[in-house]
Structures are given as structure tokens and as C-alpha cells.
Amino acid sequence: MVAMMREPECVLLKRRGAQHVEKLIAGMSRQEELAFWQKRTEIMLERQKQLRRRQDRPT
Image (tube, rainbow, N blue to C red):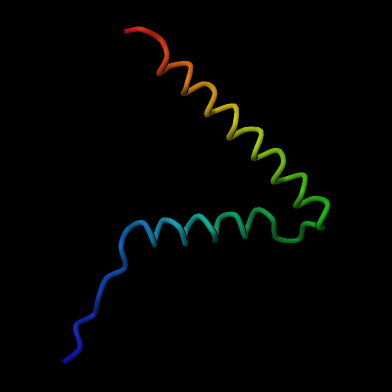
């Protein structure tokens, strides 16, 4: 009998994220997709800046 292996949670989260993005960009043109990713990248970079500022503050 072959034991069924469960996928690690990280794989499930990755797949769920990919499905979410697929729904968000469904029907977009190449230009719209490019604009989408540029905007999301800006948001991510801003979040990273904010986190670094918080970590640099003395407690």
C-alpha cells in the first residue's frame, strides 16, 4: 500500500496565491498586466520601507 503524502502548507499557500493572482489578471491585456505588476511592486517596496523604518527605531 502506498502512503498518501500531504503537500506542505507552503505549497498550498503558493498555489492559492497563484490562483488569486490568476483571477485578478484574468481578461487583462499585456499592457494592463504590466501596469498591474508595476503597481503591485511599488506597493511591496513601500511596505518594505515601512517595515525597515519600524525595525530601525529604538525601542
